[in-house]
Image (cartoon, rainbow, N blue to C red; front, side):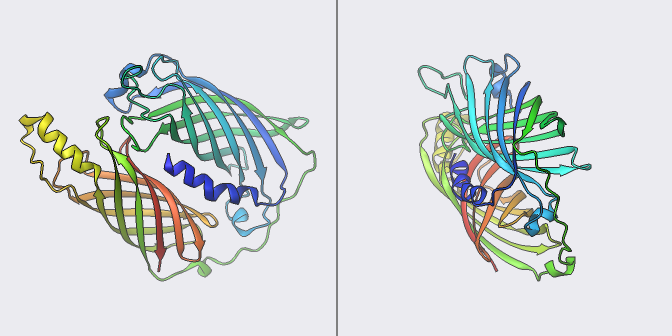
Length: 363
């Protein structure tokens, strides 16, 4: 949840500060299936989720360097409604910001979105204890689209169809939080709000050599609130420190390698709970809760925004909890040269552990 709120804070200003580019709207219907990423959600899969999406999109034509580099993407805002066809889950709605990227002569569109979701039936100990997917009413939402798209087939009307993957969870802000991933087929219409055709601006971009850099050293401090996997253990602050080097390999990419140190204080409560609730495991309530991981990553530079993906492996983890592999997906915003802030999600496979707010420096 915190990830979505913070993303909106620094992204809404970016989206609406752009010049008045030509725009279009699209309306889509979808229907699909919940992905069973864990046995714990089997009772929540009782039908085929369906819903609709409304989007407002601004086009780019190359006025800025990043627009040309990324083949003139769109950016926009979308609203979608998803009925899970399950009495415990009810329905969700979400509002998100997105980018549309184009391939294959602009016939193939890939959209990535980050936003805020609201559920109609969150977990409640007395009235809805079967919903172990959503522990809070307000959540984080991510979705991706991959579609065939054609504009102006009939006057200003066009057609698009393809696949959608959407994810709702609260980033373990509060238990329970199994989260729900839905895969769906979608079909829709788009409508251009102007009939004027605008030509793409094609300038000579800087040479690849201009993006060569020495190895950079990053320090990132990530924090937030999370709760153990058992409801009502209590929410605790966490502190995650990242130290990594990166090497830029072009305009778009940098490769990272480094280490993470985790002070996830909710584990203190969970270790104590496990020692009492499962005496057969012979767990020591004084087991060290701290963890250390080695991490490999990639940073995709767009403009002042970048997308960070990392894969880590714990080399120090005294308490046997989750897998030894972990992942992080985040968005960074460079507020001044090499100073950045951002939001991200740390997870083990399909299970979120923490929604992280970060601040750092790239030296």
